[in-house]
Image (cartoon, rainbow, N blue to C red):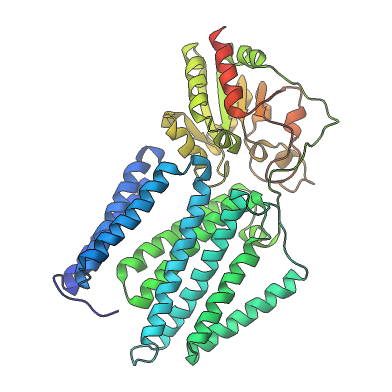
Length: 465
């Protein structure tokens, strides 16, 4: 890319990019709390707007048709997505955004190579950054859309691969490394496109074997990859704003990935290579074991005459779009003097913060949301733990059974409450694909229902108390 100039010189542009970078950092900082997350998004968006405007003016990209087309198409797609995508599909949307970010970075690097690879300015540093950007961007694009397909149910969520996958993957990696070196030391456009094509294949074959239980971690990891790809693209075209924003996304994504694997008592290598977990769609488990089945009236009485209730939301709440109904039930209980709080597991749902966003949509007060470490010690002193659509994150096997594949994963200790009520459609396993002993404990009541219908019937019964 040329050095620019025009209406904004390089010095002024540098200062304005610095302001944009500060806005990015402040925006990320404010995303740490649900109370400030909306303002954080707005601040980050303002920083990106500033960076785009400065870039357009600095490099004299002032064709009104190009600018208007970008605003109309990009803004229109963004508005349509904001209005139409349900909260249950938000993880898929994040995966798609990650993929498009990786693709954009790879195409920027490819365009730079095609335009400048024969010039004197295209040195070893430029060749290395182009090759790495194409590799990371390609893997991010295809891997993200495989994750999208798994979450959307277009491909099975269970781990699966192809015969001889370990050998095949090893050969693929060696070929990619060879192409990477070839492109750096003086390849051609053909080598570039072969590297991009095999990078896409690598993204597919590495995400396909990962089970649905680990998709939230994969999305977070690929989010980090999309940031790294953007950062590398920034080095390719020597744009500080892109380098800074990409580095921030990459670093925050890796930090979040680390938090999530710790919350699952796993390692990133185990997530990426162990082929663990199913798709949560298996048949009933433990059919021979007795359970205590409850009616809506039974649940209403137990909740209505309790002193304290801790609600544990899960993906089933999101699927049923029952967050507003849950809020209505909580309001009814609070009117009766019941203390209602919400326990949020770090990997509940299908992406980080899924439950926080879902409950915020229903205007649940932020000060009633507690993470695992804050509230886990309160379950033994709680009258009722109400589990709505959660499974693996409340499975006592993780704490009590050394032979369980999820042993050691921190869970919410709902089984230690005086009474645990589980709203679930069946006894089917969760994403980990294993049975849950919580369902069969003496202090557990199972209310078999879709979350929204079940909560509505409980709320109606509470009104009759």
